[in-house]
Image (cartoon, rainbow, N blue to C red; front, side):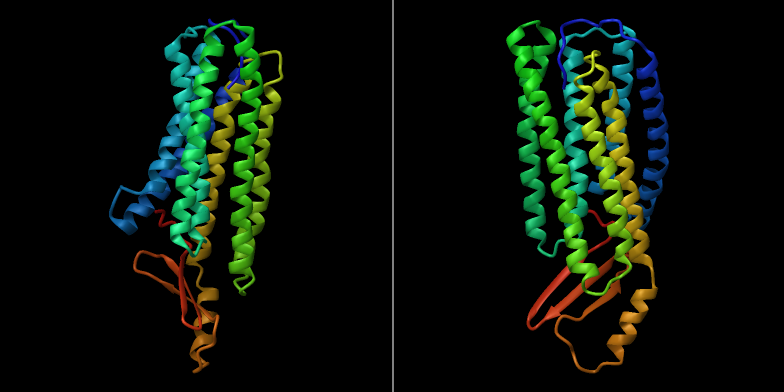
Length: 305
């Protein structure tokens, strides 16, 4: 999370003001898109108890709260007390957990084995949770004391855990790209090339946010990177919302659906490996792959589990 001693030192407000303004702008934009998706999901499911929706809104609020308290701390309106640092760790924990879980949830949409997808999410929850606990045990004491030993340990661990999150982000997005290319595009679903290409572009932006956080930790201002944190995770959230919108638009497209149905109807013989696409009542697109006696069902929709 960063090093430094107890108290609320006076920092230059120019750059933090820019970061704070950018975060507020992102929060407004994200709120509009999140509201549109939430109403669309509620219209299909008739329920507000949707994991994806709750993760998006919780991450959005965590970004907003972190931006506000960091701004107040930089201004000197909040003191560097245990309560402030503990609250910062809680918000940071929500950001790291939810950002990665949303990506894992997206990956789960294109995984045939849903048990494996669930195991992935649980494993990710535990792994990130252990890192969160370690950060709380190291970062808070380092911020509250001027112990050279604790500050040195924190400097090393802080950069290490940031690299770990970067690698997790990269691994999840790489797995998603691999699944889309091998199991969708390779089977003739050309419309998913747009999803693949878009994901390649935005993953570079997402990873650059992690890299910027790591770089900022070496700046003279020891708290500047923390002010940038809500900006970085707001960008990550916008990326995931855009990805969700793109998936929904691709799924709703009828051109390839009609061509696949026409091809299936003109062939009276069942061909192993043929994929047919159907729309369920709630707008879901379900891939049914048949190979000999094997059957698989892959949900590629915004029906987040």
